[in-house]
Length: 469
Ligand code: BG6
Image 1: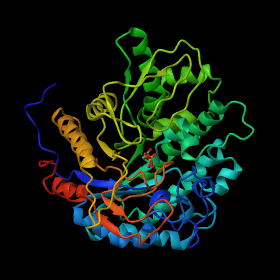
Image 2: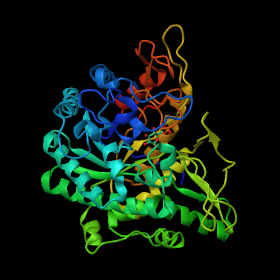
Image 3: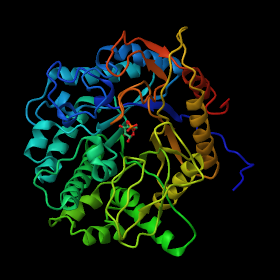
Image 4: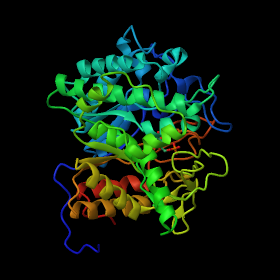
């Protein structure tokens, strides 16, 4: 639809940006924090360890002041489970409680709404050693952790996100450093049992949030990419529906409606990976209701029919995977790519948002969206990231159109507020509005610089998205 009757962006739209604890904080084993799976993983060759990152742990005041200067209405960050509970369960670390309390207070000082992700890829290593999410006990471990967060921060935090990209944890955990298949004969079986436990944990935590904090709002935060068929051949359409179900709707159908998506279920049957479901599990699923959907969007993906030949291929969050007999990756010739090979598809953003809204009819907040690039600091202290501005502008344009089409959008928090370490491609893959003066292995002075996108986004926020130039 070519929109000529534009609507205004909602008042109180939550303009901001996002980070995650293990990628930005550093101080990974300091002040009582225990190790998470991210702290013990072998980082990909040529990329930095996660011990310093952007040193947000020590510099959060300076960083939040810069966010306030940009006019942020919201800041989405995650809490490191092992800063609060170093062993994942048991003793609480008072310094951890204090740190996130300080971060929240610092946000509120500037009227920035804290949006707290409870879990972003950093399971406590102590729990991982016991079997992690594969164990039924993990459900209550997460609920206990969530309760501590609600008790300590519920008076100040209105917006909660449960699990960041549970679909990526399940589909590409080896790239994220979260999978362990030692001694496992059927990896799908292990992954989807863990997935079932995470879904139960999420449902319980959503209910707990509503019971404990009646004024708070809570939602999931999967990575949603609408899947295109490679052509209008009917079999390609079926393949696209398969991956849409496995990658996207499995997670949202469960979060919103409390039921397993039938196509995803059939995929699990095909792979002998149906999870063990205990009596009462589906009642628990049905009792958890999100107030909104948080979602990360980087691009769409495209697939064609698979005749069942070939091997399964695992990509990363945004690049091609294939499952014989289910779908086969197809490179979309209509899209440009980032320097890191991720497709760029602003129209697909609107298509994704439209599809989600028609399926779930819940307000939505974009919890990630952004461009990873090799930024350059010039001698006079500037970063001319016009490519990032272009990317963000084109995506915000599509949100505005979606709003005109009647989709309820609550906010936009792109990735990332500040440069941080990427999941597997180091700090040279930069996303921030704020540049951190360090290289992959040379920490330099860690000084903060405002990129051109910093000034541009400031004006976008000041005009509530009216002026994108
Ligand atoms: C999302 C994650 O998958 O994408 C973030 O939630 C991540 O943690 C972001 O950093 C960008 O991906 P990457 O691989 O470039 O860091």
